[in-house]
Amino acid sequence: MKSVLVLCTGNSCRSIIAEALINTLAEEKYIAKSAGSTPVGTVHPKSIEILKQHGINTKNLRSKSWDEFKGMHFDVVISVCDQNDSKPCPIFFGKHKKLNWNTPDPDKTEGTREEIHIAFTKTFIFLKGKIEGELL
Image (cartoon, rainbow, N blue to C red):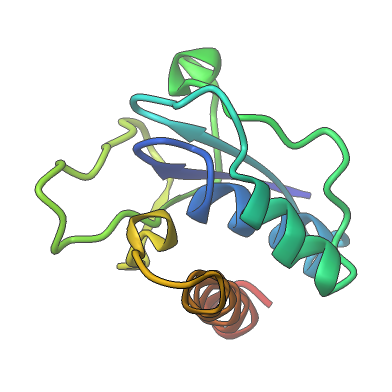
């Protein structure tokens, strides 16, 4: 089994969704964790909703700091931050394969409930495609 760390800033949406997807879609090959450089401390309810809607296990998902993983080895580190955002993308140092999946933050979507749901769905579909295309 290879270990994966998925990073973003807040660890409430994108990295959480990617962690759950990897642990479901690639459970025979990878074990994934996620973290944020400045975690918000809670998982966004829409992240949980969209994962459950697609039959993905949400048990044990929580927002956590990358400090929790300091000194640990990962085979792959994936950054899912948005390069168009003003916040810098976190960098996790070490010898590992580095992937950067430029993923807009669905939590920044403003609009109706439907528009917000669509943003989270797009994030889910994008990350699922990246996992299937680059990890499986």
